[in-house]
Length: 192
Ligand code: SF4
Ligand code: SF4
Image (cartoon, rainbow, N blue to C red; front, side, top):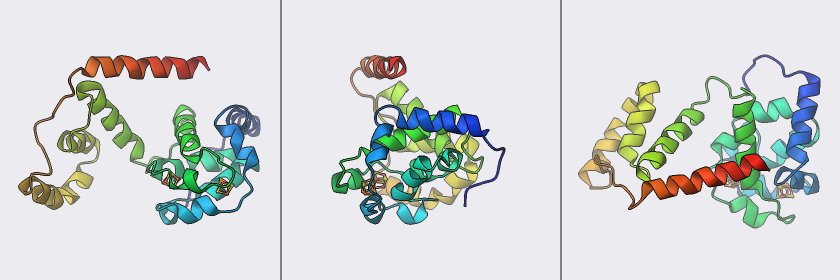
């Protein structure tokens, strides 16, 4: 179920709909034939408030607030299974990124959705080391969500014992160069 909160005004909802459908990649939602192949092939569809097909139907129907409050884009693991299968070649995974960005910008992420905190911890890791250290990622995320980390402590110990978890982060050769590339990509995106 999608959490309750304040309601986005109808004109803002229309504006958001126009923003999503007015440019790439969101405009391809208009070519969706609602066949459901994406939702049928998505490994996370059962955990999502709405599968990709239903999410796109909400957006086309003008129920953008409900779409942006849903957990769907946040639960997307970017496996690209839906994109490979879509008969309309809609860039579904790319659209999920756009929806995440918009829901953050509009303050529509429900409080019980912890995924933005995990994404933020991930980003900090990449900025520092150029790659992710699972141990540090969980330590960073655990500052806000210690119970989640404690619940996975036993699994972490097992992974550590098998040498699959590294406590000391490993850097790529030039993390600053990667950061420069990420910054440039961000500026390009903002200029669109
Ligand atoms: S597979 Fe493509 S066309 Fe079919 S419902 Fe999903 S997005 Fe729409
Ligand atoms: S890319 Fe995302 S929406 Fe598409 S199948 Fe994978 S998890 Fe589901």
